[in-house]
Amino acid sequence: MKRALVFQHMDHDHPGRFLDFFAEDRLVPESVRLFEGQEIPSLAPYDFLFVLGGAQDTWQEDQFPWLAAEKQAIREWVIARAKPYFGVCLGHQLLATALGGEVGPAETGEVGVFDVTLTQEANSHRLTQGLEPAHKVMQWHMAEVTRVPSGARVLATSPLTKVQAMAVGDHAISTQFHCEFSAQTVAGWSSLPGYVANLEKHRGEGAYQALVAESFPLMPQMGRMTRRMYDNLATASGLRR
Image (cartoon, helix red, strand yellow):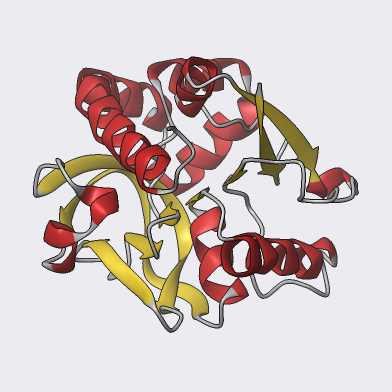
């Protein structure tokens, strides 16, 4: 069995549909609850690093001191070890800052279902092969990557957020959008009043029910897109042989 290390920043958060992918590849996830003070273990025994989203911002190291250690671990994983990495939302932004890029407040935040399109560079990149040129995705962010690190490639963009997906070599990919959100993820928010309240803060009363109605019919295509990215990463990085 292989081992996936998961960096978690919020309670009740998880890799969503990626858990099914992990199970198929006999990849057992082990979460580090950084927001509770759990320490990052030695990276040596792990085969995959998955970094989740969160309410924190990459520049809040004074408020969340563990962010510095997390960035150092991401840098070690992606640069020194060159092992497979997938980051979503905050995990996307942390990859950028860990490798020397920049993140700042979004000019316009995105919460809900939005459109993204592949860049010209994505047409020839191994991690985006087989993807359609445009996709509906789930978003929940108020910050964004404003400058990609040296050597990174922008694979997807949108009218409101220039860097929607980014790759480092053939072994690391990250998305600003929440490609891990599955139908089960969204349905689970009904039992988490804090999630529903936060959603209504951004989108108004009844936002949760409206998002369920809009997103559920799109889940199959979102799943196919995410599966393709994961499969590309697993093959290109050597995770799957």
